[in-house]
Length: 274
Image (cartoon, rainbow, N blue to C red; front, side, top):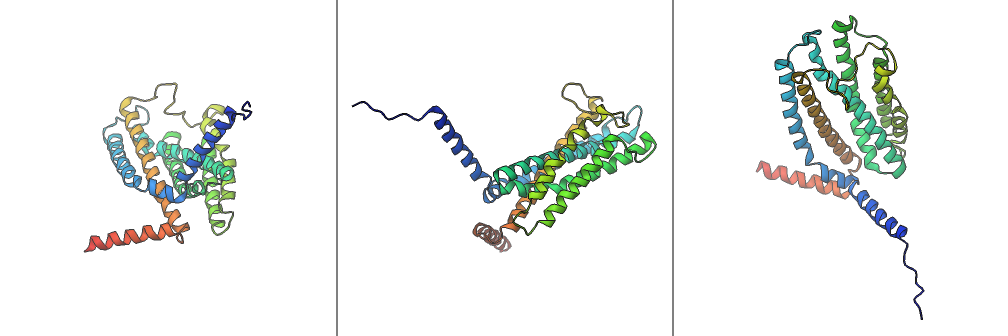
């Protein structure tokens, strides 16, 4: 009698494989797994950040030559450019994390977004302050309602709104949903910030680094700036992991794994004092 059993179609096999792959990924992004995987990273990321930022600061402030038009006032770019870049990058990350949280219900994504929101807000405020300081000798005024400056100010308000929503829904079952939605909707402001100097006539200069064009300054200027940017990105990564892990411990203080972790830490401290 012929075998009438049909083999599984390739699509079903592929679906099963990718489903198992996705389920395996989900097991690595749980709060406990995130905490245990990334906790050791903090000290190494902070160390790399310290080394890079030290090199970038000393090189940029002491050894980089003065600009032929702006003199030494341009040196504020070693703070202004990295903080402005981080403010946009962090908000973009928050919008991606918001999508992950709303679509796939991954709680860790929402916790990371809550952790990085204040960091992004501080970077945004620093970029506005340093930009205003730089604008005085360059433009003759601390502030103009320029397209780039105005859209960056809107980004600061968006950050403030996201943080307020996280605080408002701190003890709610819908914690983070409203903040995730605002993060996603507010992301429309990012291309406006990015391309404002191209879409409108603005006082703000164009991008210092682009993928297709050579840097608009000598290597003795842009190399320390690049080092400073890398250092600040590593610093933010360390702060993001540290704050995320702190929020995880705070939210899941009643879980058994948190109690075991804290007991192990207390035991290590006691042994260290003996």
